[in-house]
Amino acid sequence: MFDRLQRSLHASSLGVLTATLAVGLFLVGCDGGGALQDSTTTDETTVVSGTVTDGGTAKSLRTAARSKATVGGATVSAVLLKNDGSTEALDATTTTESDGTFELEIARQTAGATVIVTAEKSGTGFSSSVGVQIADPAATEAQPMTPETAAEAQVATEINAQAEGSERADEALADAAALVDNDVASAILSGETAPENIAGLARSMDQAAEGYASDAGPEIPESDVAAAEADAYEKLQAALATASDSADRAQALSAFEQAMASSYEAAGASKQLQAEISQTGTQVALSAVGASALPDAAQRGLERRATVLRAIATGGAIEGTIANKGTGSDVSGPLASARETLVEAVRSADTASEIRAATEDYRSSVKGQLATGFNMSEADVQDGFDNLQSALDALDGALDTAIAANSDLEADAGAVSNAFQNYYENGVQTVTGVYSDRGMKAGPADAAAKVTAKVGVF
Image 1 (tube, helix red, strand yellow):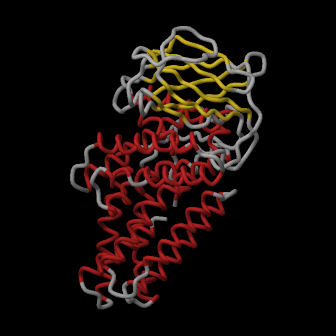
Image 2 (cartoon, rainbow, N blue to C red):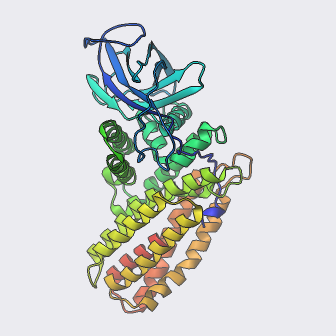
Image 3 (cartoon, helix red, strand yellow):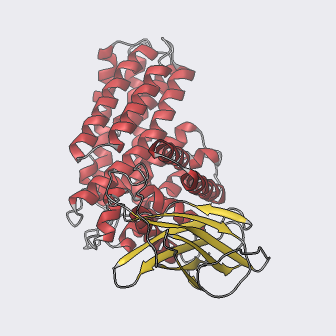
């Protein structure tokens, strides 16, 4: 289904570790560049300190082992992303020491300020960057600088510019980090994919999700959603800054994914609504996978990131529904295990076919647990899925019309939102009737139908 919907995404691959930057932010007074020694904290300046190291390649740079090679003699500078969508060059530079360490003193920043730190080495072509959210003006440490963070920084800068003040700058960092993996980053850094196109995709995803949220449930303050996502990035930044090995980095990324996939829930949505919002937003990215303008690796990276986020939100809703409304055996454990298996398989997938095989395995697992959890026969469950097909076909058709027939492959976020609202309304009603006809009471039949509809959209 996802191949049929196309969207403006030029993704990029995150796979080549060119630089690792452990950036610590400490507030210190001074003007000018040069590596700083024995700085003294004042209320007028902020010191960004860290290390730049040269890297190699890995499937995921955030789970790869740190490289030992350092980058000395690189010039470090920074710009501030302002909430009105503009940028401000921060008048300061410094140079990394031979061991790759540096301290960059900039004008005093407030908590929540968004800074892009860049390291470049003249004559070598080396350049990398990282988005830094200032958590504490007195002392903030940023995550390591890698090719992935370099691509994320470019995308976040473009998101901020396109938003023109309609969203917080620190939320742009979170949105960029949620979409850019090793494949997406390499496409951006190689020039195959423009960061502004990834930024446009991220904004369309947000708009589709917001549209569904505003029409399908009680009012959820967008400011609370933005705050939850900014908090997710801040915690990712802090965890990666102190991570000592690949296990720590994998755990940090997993926690970030979980937080991004539940940002509306954190703002007051139910698990059911969170899953539907997440499915609507990620559909914009998944639909872009079919766009012929995208490199294969970029398509794979997009499908990987969107499927992981969708799986986390959808799995949580399914597990909660069966646990609370099921009439048969407790299947929360097997369902959680199936979701975890899906997420890990998608994260490590090398091909689109592997991603889709993993989702098919998950769908099969849910079907079996749905029967056990609601005390139904497998034939009854299959009847529910068979009768859902007409709603899925209608969703496909509506999503097709949500794509503008132009070179930009732009998606109509409102049309995507409406397509999912109709899908859930019609699909759940149809499947509830099927399960009711099999003798289920109204409450369990409705709950089972919601599970069917959520896994069916995979």
